[in-house]
Length: 326
View 1 (cartoon, rainbow, N blue to C red):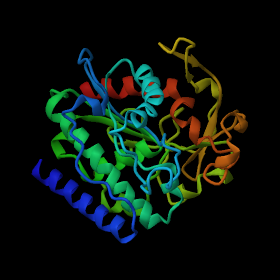
View 2 (view 1 turned 60 degrees about the horizontal axis):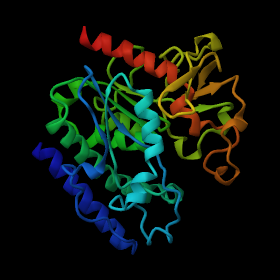
View 3 (view 1 turned 90 degrees about the vertical axis):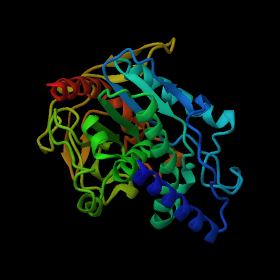
View 4 (view 1 turned 90 degrees about the horizontal axis):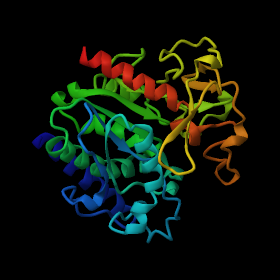
């Protein structure tokens, strides 16, 4: 535990130095995760396994509007509330598990338009909160149960940082799998962290699971071009063969009352190309946003990644947990 906390402190100091040099407003003071204000959900412990969930980028405020800071101030209620719709959806989607979801000082969307070196430094700072929240969860909530790590987009980036810097070997053994949906892992990181970031390339093994969806490989997120990990969520392999949409178990949608999830099956088939999931039956206009076209070109389905294959993910979690228990 001491090693993990020292790592977190090092990351904080590194981040503060970086921000000071760039005349940015620094992030200071650790979040007290003993305060339930900083948890969207901390579980009822009625299920046999947990989900530790980190939400994607919800802060679209500009750098100037955010007080010259790249980070969200979660001491403000409105900043926490921005994440709540996404968190509720995922709590419903993963309702077979105890759902643990902290708030964290995530990066605003504009941070992803900065040079990669700057983005990596900012990510290390945001990840300190996630590491601290995870350690508090393990010490006070987990009680020895197996758990899944789940994220989407920036949430997946934070999970990857947690895997690299914030877990003990004993904790890794309790992890069933890490679903890092809608992000990427580079060859450099794979070489540097071979055990922490080991990809899961079948339907049952422990490891990291990544997929990025699009209708055309030319629509890949420019930021993800160095990614070397990808799995087909219809088959849970890295085979590149085309798979029929009969294998699609359901696009996840919330019902009108926002109290349960509806699954719409057989929406798309697909295949892997250059580690990306090419969805052959989806209308790309479903999620296209003109103002975000530089980040998510027409044909990119990043916004849908966390729910387009929701039925397959939920069934795969059951499969992996059964295998883990056996």
